[in-house]
Image (cartoon, rainbow over all chains, first blue to last red; front, side):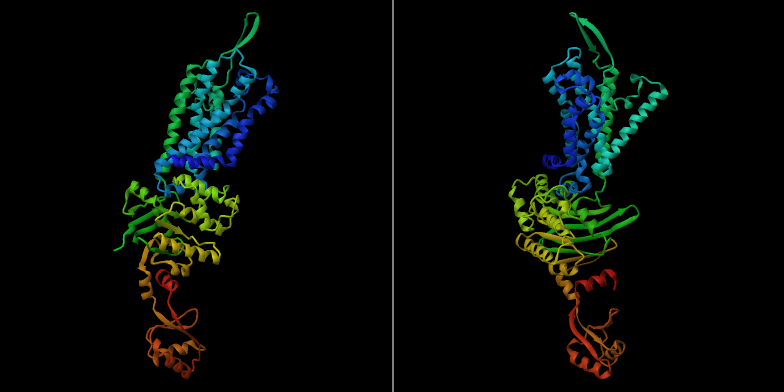
Length: 265
Length: 304
């Protein structure tokens, strides 16, 4: 299995789409801070980047997530080089496990590093604004790994079913958009508040987890401080955990059964 | 008796309502070169895919190197290599990079093996040229290089000389012969170029409509392929009558493509020629031939 992971990582590192996704993610802070927020990079601190920018470029992040999940896991399905692993005598379960690990590693771990490195970067440059709890932000960042896992698992399932990373990315994005629209329609029609959403509709996107809506102003030692309510509401915590783990596991199980049982013509 | 490397036992494969393989059985001896022969859609690739583990049989059993069952076959496949349908490779990678990916996947520790196999298939000078810019012949060579990477004991090759130029065909034929002779590699090969197979194979499996039509060795094929005289005259209808009535030839064939084949009385060809001349059917062609693999294939598979 290690050999398959090494082989997948070798070709993933040389893949143009992966390269573009990584460059886009690395360049995201410049785009967000310079062009969207209109602030100088040197004037930004970590907390401000988190509050103002982190949830804004969500579509780029989703697209990067899909690319970084689909290409390592099933980028070899379209050109059938994946078949060599079967013909070389690797068991299908091991091949699937190796591909799932690779897809999740690139689509969750690498993506998380690329998504959140600006917090550290701007924290080092401009410090951290005291009105934003750093502990709460760390909790939200760690919790966001779960919806990232769910998105990645969905993308792995789609590319497995369609036997193509390209189709996997395309159809996952479409499904994601439809899911978001459906959620908006349900919220609109039933006049639901966030905490009243059914669990499986909870946390369709990471942006929600990072959206800090409320803040209060205090005067501390004669200085006006805006304190953001960053604590994670319990409904958000549980819907994120349950929806991500249950649905993520279902997606990966479907992908496994398909890979294990279906002929590879 | 030679060791059996592959034993295909009563294998059937159903795709929906279509029966791609129907109770197929044959054995492959160690050290043999087996030609899998049949028209398009006969089931050759399906057999190879089942051997490679890409397709599950609907019924029957496969043994490779005496092992069966999922685990056993996977273990046996580590001693084998396959090229099925087309040589798969990553478009954006060079020949060396494609082989490096496969080297990692197969867990081959020796990096120098890549240079060795590139030299063997004469692709050592392709540099950074990407696979998508390769000619069909180069792609085939890379497929063979990939198949050689793990020093297999069994090679299963589906149309490996497809797209090669004449020189390339000769080189690959010699390479396969050498591997078979020097390294004792058992080879299963399919090709539409029957003349090539006849220069290479020690055994033949004829397949059509998913059924085995015949399994025979090169010696058996030679015995089956009788010698004959190809005769052409300015009046073949008359010639046919003379050959039957005056020369007493019972075993003859009037070919649709022109000419007559006689399978007996070959030692009396001077008398036959004289009889035709005197009977008014002037011979224009008199050639001694031997039926070849192509003739046998046409007879067995196409029923011609």
